[in-house]
Amino acid sequence: MRSARLVALIVGWSAVALADGGVDAGSIERVTGTCTERWPEGKPRPKLEERFPEKGTSGWASTLEVVVEHGKGETVLPSGFRIELESDAARALERAGFALPDPEGGAGPSIDVVRSGETAKSTVKVPVVALPPKPGRTEMELPPLPIAIARASGEIVTLCTAPHRIVVEDPIASTPDAKPKENPPPRPQREVWTAAQQVAMVAAIALVVGALMAWLIGRWRARPKPVPPPPPPRPPWEVAMEELGDLRARELIRGERFSEHYDLVSHILRKYCGDRYGFDGLESTTREMMSVLKRVVPPISVLGEIEESLRHADLVKFARLTPNADECKEALERAEAIVRRTVPLLTEPPPLPAVLPAGPGAGDGARAP
Image: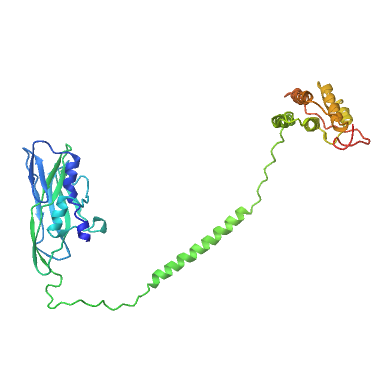
């Protein structure tokens, strides 16, 4: 039953007073079936003015109006309205045949505060629904309900309203032999053409604006976009040192893949020399590479180490000479030293592109030096 689940938002007011802990040990206490009244001893009880209708209709709300006179700094119902479904006051209110509407349904209690100087009046209006257990005319009594007041000092005072009697009639008490009525016949719906015209006008304007925006967005997306310049190439010495480090991490020497290791060292060194001094090192023989490197100005300080590495690599590749582990390790360390010692200084001008000498010859991967 909904009324049994909705017992009063007022029922929680006494619980608010106890939870907020504002009652002194010397307070005056008066207990009724649905309310416990407390106020400080030695101070007058706040004045309450109550109004409740003498007659009501079963199932309809009757408003209990309570006017509280209090100080300017005091607040009635400081924690608002709360629903306590399992409290003693809630059960007593239900046994008396009353229920409170759901405050979220638009028919909840309201508070209106009017301040005048150092005093104020708070008018609390609480709708109460009478639900008599039997049909016909019924005389019922609304039990006392608690109202909490927070004083300026933080102390909570709880007051109880007086019991009110009301005579409840059935909604059809004045109709002899009342019978249920049929639903009224349906009425034709009438269109409000002014609203339809306004909606159509707004829709047309929105359509035009949307088409214009789509055209503008399409033009903006189709605009010529500047092509960003490609990133600058990495320096050849960085690339060579990275490749030599990857080759060292592969540990081909530990796997006794000596010829493969030696060939990769020669490949990295030839590519580096070509990129560093401006020619195609992979498509040049050892003789052609040395001819170009000897003409570099200023002279290359490790020219002898480069020639020794290339000559020995040719023997491994073309004469089927198998190097040992120490020779492979030495070749890798020599290549790293060549790269480090040929890194240009900041003040050194870039070398001019080298021109390979004309004449028959083959690339490193296809012919002998």
